[in-house]
Image (cartoon, rainbow, N blue to C red; front, side, top):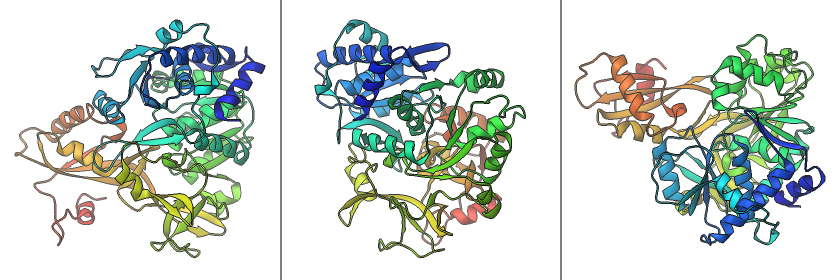
Amino acid sequence: MNVLQQIASVAKEHPEKVAYRSAGQTVTYGELWEQSNALAHTIKKMNLPKNSPITVYGHMSPKQIIAFLGVVKAGHPYIPLDISIPLERISHIVEASKSSFMITTEQFDLEIAVQQQTANDLIVKGEGAQNDPTTWVSEDEVFYIIYTSGSTGKPKGVQISESNLRHFVAWINEACSLPNGVYLNQAPYSFDLSVMDLYPALTGGRELHAITKSQIENAGLLFEELHDSSINVWTSTPSFAKICLMNPEWNDEQMPDLQTFLFCGEVLPLQVAKELKQRFKKATIYNLYGPTETTVAVTAVEVTDDMIETYEQLPIAPVDTGILKIMNEQMEEVTDGEKGELVIFGPTVSTSGYLYAEEQTNKVFKTHEGERIYKAGDLGYIQDGHIFYAGRSDFQIKLHGYRMEIEEIEKQIEALDEVGACVVLPVKSGEEVTALTACVALHNEMTEKPFKVTKNLKEKLLKAIPNYMVPKKFVYLDSLPLNMNGKVDRKRLAVEVGL
């Protein structure tokens, strides 16, 4: 059965079961199915261009999930847009994707050239509509598009098909022995980590418990919500777990039902895994790896006490998956201990690549021995039958679970009137990027104190890029050092600023 058929089966057998819970709002599987039918019916009557993407703007609302399903039932891919994304970036995504329509579940204050309506209005207009599987997105048709950072300074739309998603759901259920129960939904839908809990939960008849941005920003609300949630499966970045570990009372007494931790999006530090094992003695921890381009994750390793005691960092995969390989520039598999690029094979590799970006698609999506592959740009090596992550091969990094490209941040900073030149340097702890430092040469001599200049630049940047992409520290220099080729000498710069 395809993804929608699996959810339909649950809705038919357990219509009264809660599918989604967020900030006191709930929707059952029966309501989810009927309301998404209604929304799909209304969209189909609009006669939008065939297969054109539809943007869905909001934050952790049950109506967002209804909109996602309604859109794909109507034969269109959806593009999730969270309220945390700057309006300028949203405007670019809407324009670049040639989105034919926008559905909102929160107030939207940007004037855009595309028609928009609230999810609720669309549902009301289509009330009572019958199920029509003939128009559903299926197989190699694009199911969703998630935008990631791009080296050109513009986001790239990663297209994931129904087949990609279906294979991912089947794989993660088996690889991580996923139990039934309640699944934490913490990542915003514009971040592909959210897919890790959303579709394994919905296709398996499980309950999703979402926590909102406002709850996360208020420690008291956050831990009260977690205590009352009865969560069995926890999905997040390691960074979010680090925040929770700052509370000494966050343990298996506060969350006695927690059985499984799923971590992806960035390096899982040994110390975090060790402390989680001490606090949640009955829970199993999985370290997962995979880029957005290959449908969330492609490998999973159960973290054991032996691993924590033996290695300086946790492995990301067993060596014999057949899905993840380490290869040299000649596309030959490397020997043990030798560094190479992580190359991903298998049915979750995006069939269509990047939306309207053929040149970028052709750079990283290749055919190798008759099979479609994705060259991740990550480095790795083999040791003791495991694959270990060894950083990025370019300027693309992961910070707090978000993937971004250094060049995009630099372009946005250099676009500010005050800035003459800029280099952004990652601050690392081992292989993990923990912060960003911007080295800036201003156009004119500084007339204010540095902290005031930094405050002004950060405020301007927040209008163009998300908060997590804004460098933590700004260092001001008269000029940036150059190497023999006339390019900025990043290594020398890092030494000069003490990184």
